[in-house]
Length: 411
Image 1 (cartoon, rainbow, N blue to C red):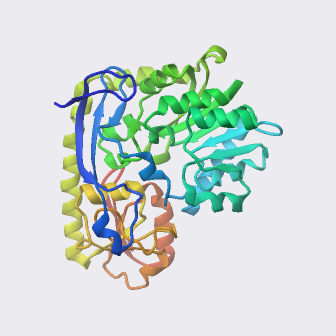
Image 2: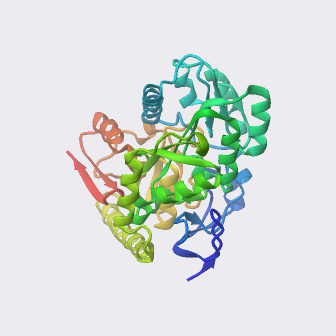
Image 3: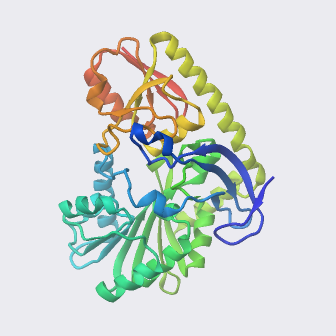
């Protein structure tokens, strides 16, 4: 075992439990001419037996990952619809309207905040990606292109005051110093402010062997126990939790300033008990993960080899971060996949990090797919891709890696 220091609580002996190897940043899609300059970083995971925070052993500098960001919230119609539903759900549940003030941390291209405009015009996005400034401007979303921390928050509160709602979808897991991020949020919270965050749920993903949410942007993966400990260190209290399907299984939590917090919901207490029953605090729960992941690699490689014998190279569906992890860890390259289709225009014409498979538009698949098999890398959009393929082709086969490795045959 390798012992390191916990980036959350500072415990001196966190435990390494999963090694995925050296992989480039998963959203760093490059041009073919840039392959020689590509940089890889170790992608290995550890857990803290004190606060139960799952974390990367080595962190890539955020400036490298997020200043020029190619993942877009509006990258697929299904994600746009999802964010519209999120805005409607939160607005209804928490009565967001009129003069209520909403701040989003990690607001990306402004898609979520653009949907909040029908409920309140008092919105603000903060995100370090400088290449997304114009996309926010097009949507009419006020946007500060900076990392969110106590320094940024102090400047915002001077210029704009405090907020009623602060939202962070999958951004707290991306932030190495997430306690400073939460302290920054606290600076901007009025006494009744709700902080609403989402993040991948370790017990429904990684601890089941679903390793594709592990990448350099995802510095941390949370259990509810670890989230409560984290928020406490920032002077906040978790008062409610929802389990949602996003990214294969995530938590949506609500928190308030500790001194003004409402009563903790029964859902929080119930999930804490469930985590204990599952054994989230037992070393063997974590140490079994590497075996599950290694077995998955063998089974997927065997499936791909069988499908290549049937009809030649496969076609990849989607080029999400999770797909790049699967390709690199399972050593699936250009000899296995002819090309990958993805709706994000910023990725088209480039190659996937690490394995350098060309990325093209969905329309480039063409009509000649006889005996061709697809590898569904955006497996969380399975129904959408099935619908699109059925509209175009009478028959096809599709490998779905998660949540259960399977081959779907149509026609």
